[in-house]
Image 1: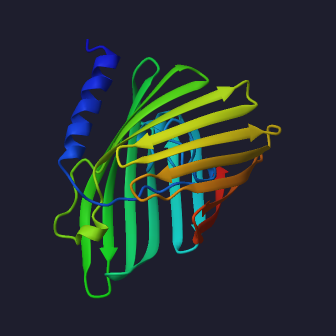
Image 2: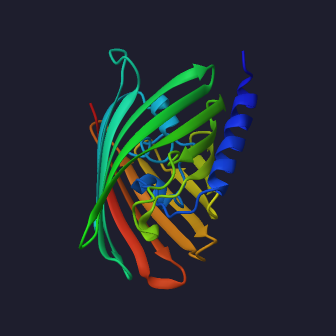
Length: 275
């Protein structure tokens, strides 16, 4: 049997080589929980993030969840099932966003995603997300298919390590270069300290690095803080937020702001309903 560490090493080498040969532009969706924590979450388990940050976390997301998220020019929805009755942990997700581009005009994007995940060894899970993407500009539109592959390793309950490859089919060369989704590799770390605080760290091959901290006031309320930077774009951002986890629903709020550009900011709020 292939040793799990050998599998991860081979996957990471393949992904890094694959990334180095492709040039494009991409953006990964983040829920309010991950936005408030510096854009981190590849090694954390959050409804809404499983289909976009790391599909392998879907194997850990027990139960059923309905998730919706609202931000300016952005809407997301997520429905998951990981119960004893389900054949395999799976989810369906949808994200739509509108972006103003200086050279191309208004870009409207629709991303329909289907995620499946499972444990393949003790403490190891793997997940795959397939994407159907529509991108519309004022004079034309484009459609494409792509996929993300993620691995999550939890050596103990309070530690998670993640590796994810995004857009593994490569960019759609029929679309303008400004809106192509780039193939890249992301990694994540998650550490829970005595159910009182959680530390998160993420990075990717495109120069992004983020740090996040969650402090649990009690079993219902959490405060989040974070900082991230896209070093290639020199885009440092501070973030904060809060969450409420009740017996019937959860609410998460997030804000981030560019420390060098006051017009670059975002507010978002998520509603999560377990059922």
